[in-house]
Image 1 (cartoon, rainbow, N blue to C red):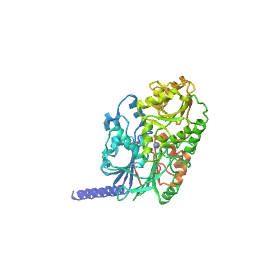
Image 2 (tube, rainbow, N blue to C red):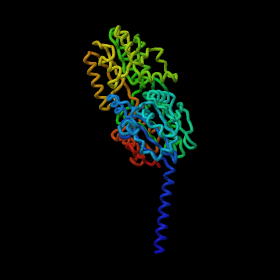
Image 3 (spheres, rainbow, N blue to C red):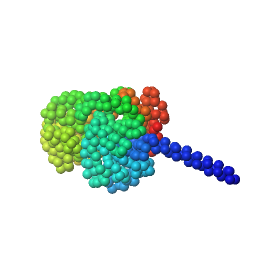
Image 4 (tube, protein in one colour):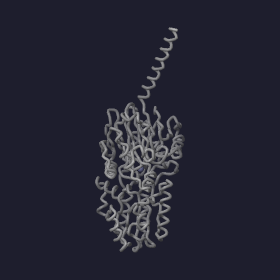
Length: 472
Ligand SMILES: [Zn+2]
């Protein structure tokens, strides 16, 4: 009996030793948690646990649900954090509740809403600073002001090609990289466990029209030093091509806009308010067309003001910007008197019911379309059912009035398969985690990695929201 008990005791202590050993090993590794954006396109958020410290990257909205709330005239600020999680508007960060006290920083590598829109609702649960480029932080400040939210988190600016120590053991470096909004960064974390690279939304554009080219030299240096983990935007990894440069979109715009000799009809261009490079090209050609340029709408004003505040562009010198209802109405009344003299830039490219273009089409705003007016869509429809339906409704309304439509004047801001191929060869990461979509979007990148010698579930990992894995 005595012997049996001591044997049991010894067995138990051996088991405890084994658990402790495993724990020590766990503590000495990188753990990755996919929080949002791994089961849908949008509401991006993930966390890296490096030894005993945690870094969060991105905190985004699920835009189709935000549009639905707007359609139903539900105001987000009246909803609680739990309501928003339940409604699938923001990521469910309960999966990292045990890591909450260990979070050292929230990193926002670019300003798109599907990457930063949830900050006003989720960030204050974490007692840590938020890092972003000057433009991202400027846009975030304006979102916080709009939503009437005052965060306790410090907002900290990090410029491209600069580094900052986040803790004793972790240094964050920002590498500027082209995307469809200014000052987008690749976030490189230098840690005792190796380099982690987070690149969720960018393209390898060798001819950007605003901002620098990719810093291939630095990327190669990091690759040579040893990248342990690369988390990368897989959105168009199924497209067998290299994503065309923004210069191609600029040439398409030039071709259409400078080809318009008509001096009697209104020309409207609609594009993404945050795509400052695209807006710059539109304004450049608008001036060459010798038309008076008018920019309409609150979101246009928001992103342009942010860019002007940090000295990136000065559109208000070249165009009239009308933000609020009365100003917008007044401008459109002027346009009605002599449409051929004007170029209007406004929101509505996804057919949003509350956008300027839709409100003109439904006569809520005082401009009456005439047969022969022209609308240029410098965008693609983001393929969510609500956008497809909204755009179809808008196009039907415009066509009814005899408006000419110029669609798909656009190039993407995301990598395609051949860019991924080059990127993987440049960085030579030990592990790859595809991001920015559900399994149908993540799989093609994992397939490509397999072709390049990676092994699925060993060094290329397809995850879904709520999954966490150990990177060894
Ligand atoms: Zn983006």
